[in-house]
Length: 369
Image 1: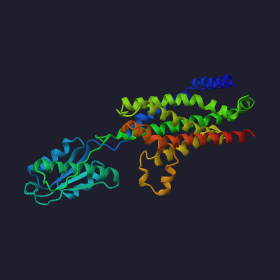
Image 2 (image 1 turned 45 degrees about the vertical axis):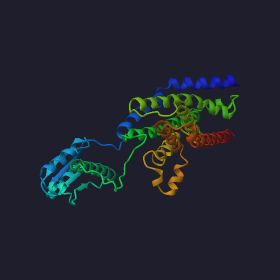
Image 3 (image 1 turned 60 degrees about the horizontal axis):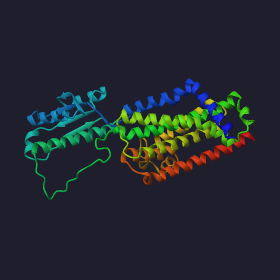
């Protein structure tokens, strides 16, 4: 029986390696997606165009304008002369922020008098507007402290922030783990969802049915080559994240690779279940893409935190395997945690894999009957 199973797996390997389209999907698309997501999905910005409406036109306001540009986050687009000119920059898309400096800026600053610097942004993009305001506010506060050289009041409560595990707030540290989870789920599930569907469509399923292998070994024989190749895919994506985007691996490499292998098997089991319920390859591909891509992208915590979603969506997010794998990746890669800190997530993925394989086996038997 083992010799037959080994021959079956070898046949699947040969079939995969001869198919250039499958190899392109397996190795080409993940590399392209990691590079695309890594460079484009970011909350950081540089050289954002801003306009300045300077009513003061004194030395202090000139120093403030220079200070805003010195960080590299802002570039002054225009120096406005009146409020009427504000709308033009926003409507043309040439400006993202307008800084309004009041009259007698220097006198009020050094006299420590109350004054207001107005920050006007384009509210049609709330996330970008909030980020710009936060950066500008922080830089204005820094400028004020530097100019006044204030000694801190010992009776004043001071808040000091520290960002552990990602002090530079590099966006890639957050998005690369989510990208890895999304890519492995879609690629692995999509490839395996086409396997049994292809056998049905080509009419070769009857050959498998008369083989001496039981249904569970037929399923494992189909999944095993994809499991090994997808694991190589996972290692390749991790290497790209480490060397191209400098995402650290602070924890155990063995634990990280084991988790990747487990997640790949989970994705393959899910893809195989899809294939047993699909009649054609096109049907299987559409189910794997539409049924997995959008939920994993939106409800896994990859882009939006689950805690900010309605309860029903939080429950749905807890069903998605990518939710747990992303937590494992962030824990092991960024925080350097050990097995006992991710044992719950590993247990959930293991249980999910067993349940998916059970339903795949049952559904496959029903199809045979």
